[in-house]
Image (cartoon, rainbow, N blue to C red):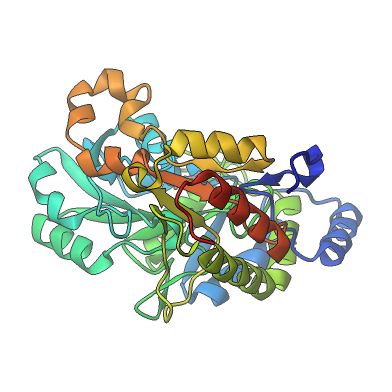
Length: 381
Ligand SMILES: *Cc1c(COP(=O)(O)O)cnc(C)c1O
């Protein structure tokens, strides 16, 4: 068994998927020829069209990153007061709200799908609540029907952090079409990347018009600012990467799927290790290989297992440890929220993400599984 790998050979979670490198290079030449780097250039406009076609959504506005996308979306929707969201998410979900002066109210999750538990939402609604923000964790869609039902009944807005869920479907419908809007991240570590970037998808043209203004300083046209705005623009180079990634999209999905199946076989029979699954029928991006470590059955803690993997050049990661509610500023601002999320705490202590994506081969997957098998006592081989 190998023990030492060079930095380049280390098996990292979140190694970027590359897209079609030749297409990217041609587009870079085009950018230099045009001498047009940003401000609604032709590549951003083309990328926007491709996004809308792919998602079957009326508007999908590219932005500089997912976090700013969430802030702009929250602002454009007029969210105020309190917004209900899960704490089992990347901290940017909460930060985007807090940055907008909105209190994030953390809701516990459903341990089956790791998403917000709709049955826990009602009791968190106050007269200050303006919205529910679901997060499609690992690209497994939230229960959008249940969330929408609550929102309609309680007169709340629904938006989604869809950072993980580009290329995923819910009931045959692409993610990007749910709630008032959905925000994607195209960060380098995500399924589909533009180095840094994101997009806000919405079927609401009025909302889209507002978002377009806001991401460009509130400019309606030259010399005419009609709204508070920020700089949320995606530059041409990022759109070029997005267009190059579209060329390889299906290939990345099949590589991810292949790796997932390999992990499924490789981890089978290891006591206390549960690989989280995806709907076999619904379209998914298969970008996340996530295991839950049940220490009572593995006999080793999640932390020990992670250390063992790290020592063997596998950069597995804990997610979303320790949970937004236990991070600053939330644990200081809202200390009462730290004790009311038992399912979230349970999951934050169990989850480990394993490397996949186009940088990871079948041999790599087998190696990772072998490293885990080695460390968990009582594994049958
Ligand atoms: C990556 C991520 C974000 C932030 O997106 P950036 O493009 O990195 O700003 C927000 N929410 C979730 C759930 C994420 O995983």
